[in-house]
Image (cartoon, rainbow, N blue to C red; front, side):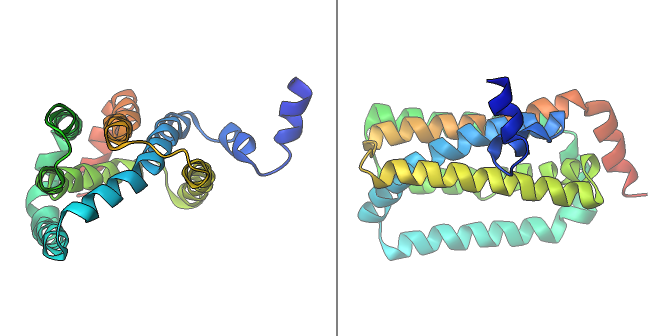
Length: 217
């Protein structure tokens, strides 16, 4: 087994890529692998169920609200919101996870409702998720810089493409979850989505909190 493992390290494959990652990146990619795989498995079922139950106007509304919220957030982020929001990174992550889990639980207990799903994802996805993404980017920029960040991004993209092909292949051969099964998979995926970063942030909190503030001086 050890010989096979050593052989794999000589070729570009998920094993060799994972082996050369630093500790924090390994933590993140471990969470990302589960998140992405569950998301790819549940995605087709949920997309089909959503589009079959809403109008083109509903979908356009979701897109419009997301764009407007993103536009307003960008307008005030750098000068007014960034530093204040950084003090609440973990609460924002927990809030996003709680809202997602609550939405999934509601839809499973009360039955699939595309309008509830649509507006539920709008309400937290248009603001909470965008804030979490911006704060995560701020911390990511401090942990990995230059060529190290470029190589890390390429490695993570490679792993995600492999997982994406695996998940899509499973659905393509006919292993398709029901809507309730897809909701559970999506709920677990969303719940784990921030877990990796919450661990990495907690592990490097003292350094990161200082570093992200110093970048403004």
